[in-house]
Amino acid sequence: MRWWVSFVALMTSCCDTGEQVDVDAQEAGDHADADAEASAACTDAEVAAAEEELRALASRASGCFAGWIVVDDAHVMEVTFHASYNSFGWWLSSCNVHPHTTWGNAIRMELAVWEAIGPWRAPCPHLMVFVVGGAQTDVTTMGEEIGRTCDVPWDAYFVIEIDEDGRVSDVYGDRRATELVACIQGVLSDDLFPCLATTQLCPSYVISGP
Image 1 (tube, rainbow, N blue to C red):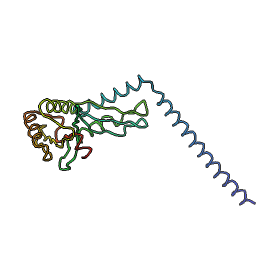
Image 2 (image 1 turned 90 degrees about the horizontal axis):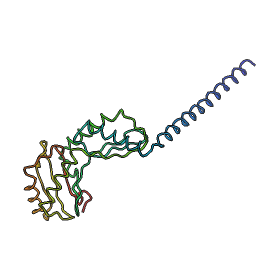
Image 3 (image 1 turned 45 degrees about the vertical axis):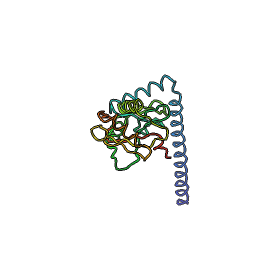
Image 4 (image 1 turned 90 degrees about the vertical axis):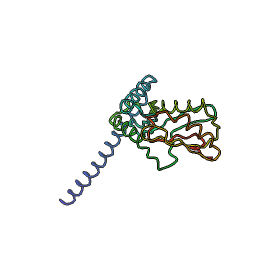
């Protein structure tokens, strides 16, 4: 009889523990849902304030960084360098079509921003913020100078490479772009784009593919 009582006690203890685990898990889930609902209730003003704080943190970490920061479930999930210039008929953007280009500066900018915003917890669960930094300014300047002097068709195929000092080290394209490449080289030969160091710039036709 004694062993039967012990067995029943063991089974009761086991089952009670299991039920308690289920209850704890349910309570934890309820708290998580409540937190998510509270965060999701951000007003437009609160979202704008959170986005501005995120931009400020990124800008302090890297004055050159331009690109996207994505927040999911109140945590920063993605930091992506991106800078582009849009004009009528053509679009110039940061790219990486040839792997021999190191992209070292872009990677350093991304890491600096990651380190600065990693501990930050967003008051709202989902944010997508574009940071306009020095790299964006450099691309805009470059695009405007090219557009003022060179005829850039919508299907232009060329690549602009920037060296470690921020100077244009090479411009090349297909056979159709011979005159355009020469024009771009002449226009940008004396310019300095420090925030674009070790990056490439391409028109949309190159990025999307012919």
